[in-house]
Length: 483
Image 1 (tube, rainbow, N blue to C red):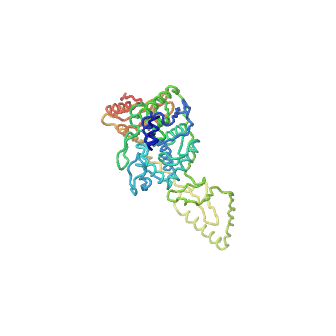
Image 2 (cartoon, rainbow, N blue to C red; image 1 turned 120 degrees about the vertical axis):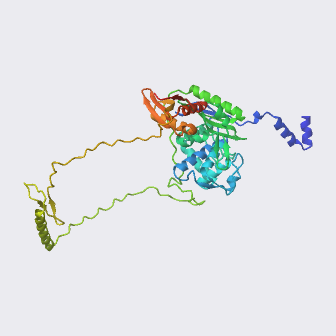
């Protein structure tokens, strides 16, 4: 206390306070902790702690940024090859960043990779501006989508997750968002498991590659860190038929956060039943609309302060009047007399031709006001006519499987309860292991015990290599040969 008194008298109180804070344990100022664990197949909560406390989500925010981007691509608002111009605002975002320059143009697909893998803040802002014209408008769309998902305690202020007043979420809401990302856009989910990715201007590395490599079955989803938030992570892992999603807010370091998430995932796999019906979450209503009306195209931005009323339904459906029936025109008598003469002449000419007419009937003449119709009997078929026999054409079936160089081997990646589940696993596995499975044929074989998910049309060496690579990722795999 004597030293403190001297510091106050000498005007050095702030210096003393700074030294005191620096020497204090960091745990005294750690971000609040929250956690959530669910069975992704059913959404059942397996563990929760402070799950509804509103906390800073940090870069977990980018899950929603990417979800809205996937939605915009699906509805034709933008495409993966759209060239996005980088604004000054996007280029000036704080790290982590891709290092984009103001005025630079880059394809949207590279921005998605940078945001998902490197967690680049400049890429996230550029995505929002490309879809909605400004980051503020994009944040409002993020909130509409969050509300439609049932994320009741989440409010977004930006597309990247850097700390901002009012930018808050919960462990429960972020877990719910992670489940929607997995089920609603499986074709893009592989982005979150890439250790490296080509982001156009450079190769980027995953922010949590150590966890993806070390935890068996882990394939995403998103990390986040700011001083206010601590070390956050939404992680998903699959083992056999089970998939668990675990969320942690407020980790004290990358290592302790990863260890805690691994512990929670283990807890989830222990508590989750091995067999359970998959109940996908209901996809949220498309939020890319203004006032519930027609979607506004990216080049048709609504001016600030202007209200547009969109009429999307008809108040009254008018029944069209019946088309008036046209009366049959009368045929003049002179024309009718001329037609009778023409009919008589046509009958006389027909009688002189060598046409076989049925002996019991004379040519039947049907007269109408328009023209005569004469019915005649065709010639009989010659008795010595040779008929050509028609052989059924043999269909040629062409597949991707080659019959040369011993490509009669395959691999099995599991047995499942439904054809849909087996096909989904085959697609996910093919995306993960393009190097060895790109030329293989995906095949689901039904038997009495379920549906086998197989890759066929491989050589023995290719099958063995594919299994080794898949098993190193924690996936189930076995080879089989010609029998």
